[in-house]
Length: 254
Ligand code: BTN
Image (cartoon, rainbow, N blue to C red; front, side, top):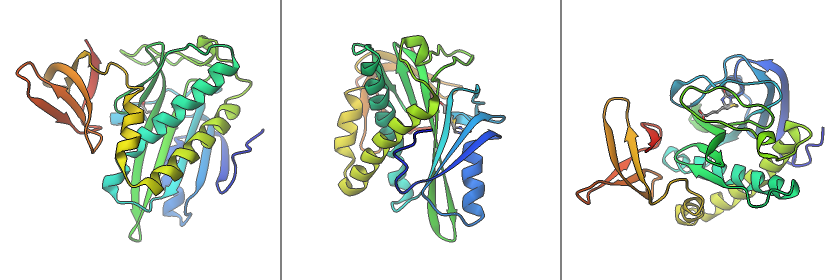
């Protein structure tokens, strides 16, 4: 295995585990402090966003990064955007190496990465406070080789899009390099604006008519962007702008 990004991160590799995010939380509770990267070839209880199941096929990438957060919980809301950008850039780099430089890679609010309009990766952030210290777990699932069946979601894999990888671990190395760069810059920057601008340049459906639902009510309008807290901004027909907080709603393309 060639994990040359290793740097300050400790690495734990499991053949099979319930969930790498759950393992990260167990580690913190048992006294381990960041920065740890946990990989599992297979997850038996992979967790998706909004309590959904993440179908974890052996051969795809399932990883959690455990970090001691030096920022407030409020600022952690910004993290899915930098993680999304890191995954975007990693796919772009590998696509170029595979001769697929014109591939369409987009970031779908709040936590998805799409290739050619189909879901290829998802991000699940969790936080935990132990002895007054805040820890964050960045869970990332990437369909590197296989396409899981997700109800109501069109999915793809890197391989299916002609992006060639020997092993999911090779892709982890690229993601970690990108993630680390974004993370260090974001910690130094203290300003979400630059990250927000970069993220919006890659946003899926920006400026288009979209519908948003909380499971009960659906609102339709124009996707105007994200606000200074990362909330989704929808312009309704009467010109009113509604802000939706990340994680509370699902996003449906019209
Ligand atoms: C989503 O619903 O899009 C988020 C999916 C996140 C899946 C990853 S796989 C590694 C980590 N461990 C988990 O149990 N979930 C995340």
